[in-house]
Length: 326
Image (cartoon, rainbow, N blue to C red; front, side):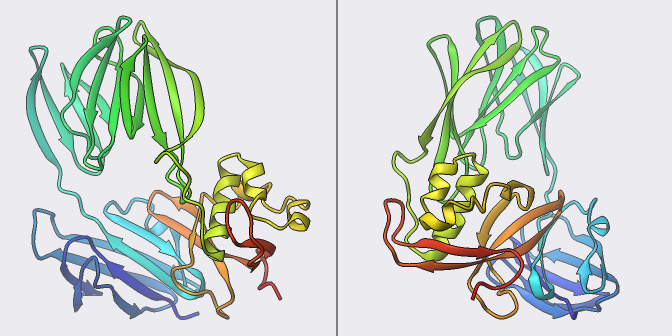
Protein backbone atom coordinates (compact mmCIF):
# COMPACT_ATOMS: atom_id res chain seq x y z
CA UNK A 1 0.00 0.00 0.00
CA UNK A 2 1.37 3.40 -1.03
CA UNK A 3 0.95 5.79 1.92
CA UNK A 4 0.32 9.50 1.47
CA UNK A 5 1.06 12.09 4.13
CA UNK A 6 -1.24 15.10 4.44
CA UNK A 7 0.53 17.83 6.42
CA UNK A 8 -1.05 20.92 7.99
CA UNK A 9 -0.18 23.47 10.67
CA UNK A 10 -2.11 26.18 12.57
CA UNK A 11 0.47 28.79 11.50
CA UNK A 12 1.73 29.03 7.89
CA UNK A 13 5.20 27.62 7.49
CA UNK A 14 7.63 25.83 5.19
CA UNK A 15 7.69 22.03 5.06
CA UNK A 16 10.81 20.01 4.27
CA UNK A 17 10.56 16.28 3.57
CA UNK A 18 13.77 14.25 3.88
CA UNK A 19 15.76 17.47 3.74
CA UNK A 20 14.11 18.89 0.60
CA UNK A 21 11.78 21.86 0.46
CA UNK A 22 8.29 20.50 -0.26
CA UNK A 23 6.15 23.65 -0.06
CA UNK A 24 4.16 25.84 2.29
CA UNK A 25 1.54 24.49 4.68
CA UNK A 26 -1.07 26.22 6.84
CA UNK A 27 -4.47 25.70 8.48
CA UNK A 28 -6.31 25.81 5.14
CA UNK A 29 -3.35 24.78 3.01
CA UNK A 30 -2.55 21.06 3.39
CA UNK A 31 0.36 19.54 1.51
CA UNK A 32 0.00 15.98 0.23
CA UNK A 33 2.98 13.83 -0.68
CA UNK A 34 3.47 10.11 -1.36
CA UNK A 35 6.10 8.47 0.81
CA UNK A 36 7.81 5.10 0.91
CA UNK A 37 5.69 2.30 2.42
CA UNK A 38 8.73 1.20 4.45
CA UNK A 39 11.32 3.20 6.35
CA UNK A 40 11.76 6.60 7.97
CA UNK A 41 10.38 9.92 6.73
CA UNK A 42 12.07 13.03 8.13
CA UNK A 43 9.80 16.05 8.41
CA UNK A 44 10.80 19.60 9.26
CA UNK A 45 8.41 22.50 9.77
CA UNK A 46 9.58 26.13 9.88
CA UNK A 47 6.89 28.66 10.91
CA UNK A 48 6.75 31.85 8.88
CA UNK A 49 5.26 33.98 11.67
CA UNK A 50 4.59 33.98 15.40
CA UNK A 51 6.86 32.80 18.16
CA UNK A 52 6.76 29.03 17.62
CA UNK A 53 10.10 27.32 17.13
CA UNK A 54 10.95 25.10 14.12
CA UNK A 55 10.11 21.45 14.56
CA UNK A 56 11.76 18.33 13.14
CA UNK A 57 10.36 14.83 13.59
CA UNK A 58 10.97 11.29 12.34
CA UNK A 59 8.02 9.11 11.28
CA UNK A 60 8.52 5.45 10.38
CA UNK A 61 6.28 3.44 8.06
CA UNK A 62 6.02 -0.33 7.72
CA UNK A 63 3.75 -2.09 5.26
CA UNK A 64 2.32 1.30 4.33
CA UNK A 65 1.23 2.13 7.89
CA UNK A 66 2.63 4.66 10.33
CA UNK A 67 4.22 2.86 13.28
CA UNK A 68 2.83 4.12 16.61
CA UNK A 69 6.14 3.77 18.43
CA UNK A 70 7.86 6.11 15.98
CA UNK A 71 5.68 9.05 17.07
CA UNK A 72 4.98 8.05 20.68
CA UNK A 73 7.29 10.82 21.96
CA UNK A 74 6.78 13.22 19.05
CA UNK A 75 5.75 16.36 20.93
CA UNK A 76 4.20 18.90 18.56
CA UNK A 77 2.69 16.28 16.22
CA UNK A 78 -0.93 15.15 15.99
CA UNK A 79 -1.43 12.24 13.58
CA UNK A 80 -4.42 10.26 12.30
CA UNK A 81 -3.96 7.17 10.14
CA UNK A 82 -6.95 6.86 7.81
CA UNK A 83 -8.01 3.83 5.73
CA UNK A 84 -6.35 3.49 2.36
CA UNK A 85 -2.93 4.77 3.45
CA UNK A 86 -3.72 8.44 4.20
CA UNK A 87 -1.66 9.68 7.16
CA UNK A 88 -2.78 13.10 8.39
CA UNK A 89 -0.01 14.95 10.25
CA UNK A 90 -0.57 18.29 11.97
CA UNK A 91 2.39 20.27 13.28
CA UNK A 92 1.52 22.13 16.46
CA UNK A 93 4.76 23.36 18.05
CA UNK A 94 4.11 25.14 21.33
CA UNK A 95 6.47 27.76 22.65
CA UNK A 96 6.83 27.59 26.42
CA UNK A 97 6.20 30.87 28.21
CA UNK A 98 6.39 31.87 31.86
CA UNK A 99 4.32 34.51 33.64
CA UNK A 100 5.35 35.76 37.10
CA UNK A 101 2.86 37.00 39.73
CA UNK A 102 2.01 37.01 43.43
CA UNK A 103 -0.74 34.89 45.00
CA UNK A 104 -1.56 35.83 48.58
CA UNK A 105 1.86 37.38 48.81
CA UNK A 106 3.61 34.25 47.57
CA UNK A 107 5.67 34.49 44.37
CA UNK A 108 4.51 32.11 41.67
CA UNK A 109 5.20 31.21 38.04
CA UNK A 110 2.63 30.12 35.49
CA UNK A 111 4.42 28.00 32.89
CA UNK A 112 2.43 27.39 29.70
CA UNK A 113 3.32 25.17 26.79
CA UNK A 114 2.08 21.75 25.69
CA UNK A 115 0.62 21.64 29.20
CA UNK A 116 0.47 24.17 32.03
CA UNK A 117 1.67 24.21 35.62
CA UNK A 118 1.78 26.70 38.43
CA UNK A 119 4.95 26.79 40.48
CA UNK A 120 3.91 28.07 43.91
CA UNK A 121 6.23 28.10 46.91
CA UNK A 122 8.38 25.44 45.22
CA UNK A 123 5.48 23.10 44.41
CA UNK A 124 4.55 22.37 40.75
CA UNK A 125 0.75 22.20 40.42
CA UNK A 126 -0.68 20.84 37.10
CA UNK A 127 -3.26 23.01 35.30
CA UNK A 128 -5.16 22.55 32.01
CA UNK A 129 -3.48 23.46 28.75
CA UNK A 130 -4.06 27.12 27.99
CA UNK A 131 -4.76 27.96 31.64
CA UNK A 132 -4.64 31.64 32.60
CA UNK A 133 -3.24 32.96 35.86
CA UNK A 134 -5.49 31.73 38.68
CA UNK A 135 -6.77 33.40 41.81
CA UNK A 136 -7.01 31.76 45.22
CA UNK A 137 -10.37 31.17 46.86
CA UNK A 138 -11.54 29.01 49.75
CA UNK A 139 -14.61 26.91 50.46
CA UNK A 140 -15.25 24.83 53.56
CA UNK A 141 -11.58 25.11 54.47
CA UNK A 142 -10.39 23.88 51.06
CA UNK A 143 -8.04 26.22 49.13
CA UNK A 144 -8.87 26.53 45.43
CA UNK A 145 -7.12 27.86 42.37
CA UNK A 146 -9.82 29.29 40.08
CA UNK A 147 -9.11 30.49 36.55
CA UNK A 148 -10.04 30.57 32.88
CA UNK A 149 -8.56 28.82 29.83
CA UNK A 150 -7.78 30.14 26.37
CA UNK A 151 -10.55 27.92 24.98
CA UNK A 152 -13.18 29.84 26.93
CA UNK A 153 -13.66 27.37 29.78
CA UNK A 154 -12.90 27.54 33.46
CA UNK A 155 -10.97 25.36 35.89
CA UNK A 156 -10.69 24.72 39.62
CA UNK A 157 -7.68 23.08 41.26
CA UNK A 158 -8.31 21.87 44.82
CA UNK A 159 -5.22 22.16 47.03
CA UNK A 160 -4.07 20.84 50.36
CA UNK A 161 -4.07 23.26 53.31
CA UNK A 162 -0.38 24.05 52.83
CA UNK A 163 -0.93 24.83 49.09
CA UNK A 164 1.71 22.30 48.08
CA UNK A 165 -0.40 19.40 46.77
CA UNK A 166 -3.18 19.30 44.21
CA UNK A 167 -5.94 16.87 45.18
CA UNK A 168 -8.36 17.45 42.28
CA UNK A 169 -8.51 19.32 38.97
CA UNK A 170 -11.93 20.16 37.54
CA UNK A 171 -12.38 21.54 34.01
CA UNK A 172 -15.73 22.86 32.84
CA UNK A 173 -17.46 25.38 30.62
CA UNK A 174 -18.60 27.19 33.76
CA UNK A 175 -17.78 26.85 37.47
CA UNK A 176 -19.50 28.57 40.36
CA UNK A 177 -19.33 28.31 44.13
CA UNK A 178 -22.74 28.35 45.74
CA UNK A 179 -24.76 26.46 48.33
CA UNK A 180 -21.60 25.25 50.01
CA UNK A 181 -20.52 23.26 46.94
CA UNK A 182 -18.64 23.67 43.69
CA UNK A 183 -20.95 23.41 40.68
CA UNK A 184 -19.45 22.59 37.27
CA UNK A 185 -21.13 22.55 33.85
CA UNK A 186 -19.07 19.99 31.91
CA UNK A 187 -19.56 19.51 28.13
CA UNK A 188 -19.15 16.00 26.72
CA UNK A 189 -18.02 17.51 23.39
CA UNK A 190 -20.32 15.41 21.25
CA UNK A 191 -22.32 16.48 18.20
CA UNK A 192 -25.74 16.51 19.91
CA UNK A 193 -24.63 18.62 22.87
CA UNK A 194 -24.68 16.43 25.98
CA UNK A 195 -23.27 17.73 29.22
CA UNK A 196 -23.16 17.06 32.94
CA UNK A 197 -24.01 19.34 35.80
CA UNK A 198 -21.67 18.19 38.53
CA UNK A 199 -21.77 19.10 42.21
CA UNK A 200 -18.52 18.68 44.13
CA UNK A 201 -18.33 18.61 47.92
CA UNK A 202 -15.18 20.31 49.21
CA UNK A 203 -13.53 20.18 52.59
CA UNK A 204 -10.14 19.85 54.28
CA UNK A 205 -8.28 20.08 50.98
CA UNK A 206 -10.28 17.30 49.33
CA UNK A 207 -12.95 17.15 46.62
CA UNK A 208 -15.65 14.50 46.18
CA UNK A 209 -18.14 14.25 43.33
CA UNK A 210 -21.37 14.32 45.34
CA UNK A 211 -23.87 14.19 42.48
CA UNK A 212 -24.38 14.87 38.80
CA UNK A 213 -27.22 15.08 36.34
CA UNK A 214 -27.34 15.05 32.53
CA UNK A 215 -28.05 18.37 30.80
CA UNK A 216 -28.05 19.83 27.30
CA UNK A 217 -24.96 22.02 27.26
CA UNK A 218 -26.68 24.68 25.10
CA UNK A 219 -30.12 24.27 26.67
CA UNK A 220 -31.53 22.03 23.90
CA UNK A 221 -30.27 19.10 21.79
CA UNK A 222 -28.81 19.55 18.31
CA UNK A 223 -30.46 16.52 16.72
CA UNK A 224 -28.73 15.29 13.54
CA UNK A 225 -30.34 16.06 10.20
CA UNK A 226 -28.28 13.75 7.98
CA UNK A 227 -27.75 9.99 7.81
CA UNK A 228 -24.06 10.40 8.65
CA UNK A 229 -24.96 12.61 11.59
CA UNK A 230 -27.41 10.01 12.88
CA UNK A 231 -24.76 7.28 12.69
CA UNK A 232 -22.23 9.42 14.57
CA UNK A 233 -24.79 10.45 17.20
CA UNK A 234 -25.76 6.81 17.77
CA UNK A 235 -22.16 5.87 18.51
CA UNK A 236 -21.62 8.94 20.71
CA UNK A 237 -24.71 8.11 22.78
CA UNK A 238 -23.50 4.53 23.22
CA UNK A 239 -20.07 5.78 24.33
CA UNK A 240 -21.76 8.14 26.82
CA UNK A 241 -23.68 5.26 28.38
CA UNK A 242 -27.06 6.28 26.93
CA UNK A 243 -28.28 3.06 25.25
CA UNK A 244 -31.91 4.19 24.90
CA UNK A 245 -30.90 7.35 23.07
CA UNK A 246 -28.47 5.37 20.92
CA UNK A 247 -31.23 2.92 19.97
CA UNK A 248 -33.42 5.88 18.96
CA UNK A 249 -31.23 6.36 15.88
CA UNK A 250 -31.61 2.71 14.84
CA UNK A 251 -34.47 0.85 13.27
CA UNK A 252 -36.41 -1.29 15.79
CA UNK A 253 -35.09 -4.50 14.23
CA UNK A 254 -31.46 -3.33 14.42
CA UNK A 255 -31.86 -1.91 17.93
CA UNK A 256 -33.04 -5.34 19.11
CA UNK A 257 -29.63 -6.73 18.13
CA UNK A 258 -27.78 -4.16 20.33
CA UNK A 259 -25.00 -3.74 17.72
CA UNK A 260 -23.33 -0.83 19.58
CA UNK A 261 -23.29 -2.47 23.02
CA UNK A 262 -19.51 -3.01 22.95
CA UNK A 263 -18.53 -0.09 20.73
CA UNK A 264 -16.34 1.42 23.47
CA UNK A 265 -13.82 -1.37 22.89
CA UNK A 266 -13.53 -0.37 19.22
CA UNK A 267 -13.18 3.40 19.47
CA UNK A 268 -12.67 6.47 21.62
CA UNK A 269 -14.82 8.70 19.41
CA UNK A 270 -16.74 8.77 16.15
CA UNK A 271 -16.33 11.38 13.40
CA UNK A 272 -17.00 11.90 9.69
CA UNK A 273 -14.79 9.86 7.38
CA UNK A 274 -12.50 12.69 6.28
CA UNK A 275 -10.67 10.66 3.64
CA UNK A 276 -12.99 8.24 1.89
CA UNK A 277 -12.55 4.55 2.62
CA UNK A 278 -11.82 2.34 -0.39
CA UNK A 279 -14.99 1.79 -2.40
CA UNK A 280 -16.72 4.99 -1.37
CA UNK A 281 -19.52 3.24 0.54
CA UNK A 282 -21.33 5.20 3.29
CA UNK A 283 -19.37 5.00 6.53
CA UNK A 284 -18.37 6.94 9.62
CA UNK A 285 -14.91 6.88 11.18
CA UNK A 286 -14.22 5.12 14.47
CA UNK A 287 -11.05 6.62 15.96
CA UNK A 288 -8.93 4.78 18.52
CA UNK A 289 -5.85 6.36 20.10
CA UNK A 290 -2.63 4.35 19.81
CA UNK A 291 -0.76 6.89 21.96
CA UNK A 292 -0.85 10.61 22.75
CA UNK A 293 0.17 11.52 19.18
CA UNK A 294 -1.48 8.97 16.87
CA UNK A 295 -5.00 7.64 16.36
CA UNK A 296 -6.17 5.04 13.86
CA UNK A 297 -9.47 5.47 11.99
CA UNK A 298 -11.47 2.50 10.77
CA UNK A 299 -14.74 2.59 8.81
CA UNK A 300 -18.10 1.80 10.36
CA UNK A 301 -20.26 1.03 7.33
CA UNK A 302 -23.97 1.69 7.56
CA UNK A 303 -27.20 1.82 5.61
CA UNK A 304 -29.82 4.43 6.49
CA UNK A 305 -33.43 5.09 5.59
CA UNK A 306 -35.35 8.35 5.75
CA UNK A 307 -37.92 6.82 8.10
CA UNK A 308 -38.49 9.69 10.51
CA UNK A 309 -38.04 9.67 14.25
CA UNK A 310 -38.04 11.85 17.34
CA UNK A 311 -34.27 12.36 17.25
CA UNK A 312 -33.57 12.45 13.52
CA UNK A 313 -35.38 11.99 10.21
CA UNK A 314 -32.89 9.18 9.49
CA UNK A 315 -32.79 5.68 10.98
CA UNK A 316 -29.86 3.29 10.65
CA UNK A 317 -31.13 -0.13 9.57
CA UNK A 318 -27.82 -1.96 9.03
CA UNK A 319 -24.18 -1.51 10.04
CA UNK A 320 -20.92 -3.44 9.79
CA UNK A 321 -17.29 -3.12 10.82
CA UNK A 322 -16.11 -5.75 8.39
CA UNK A 323 -17.41 -4.79 4.95
CA UNK A 324 -19.80 -2.40 3.19
CA UNK A 325 -23.48 -2.99 3.85
CA UNK A 326 -25.28 -4.19 0.69
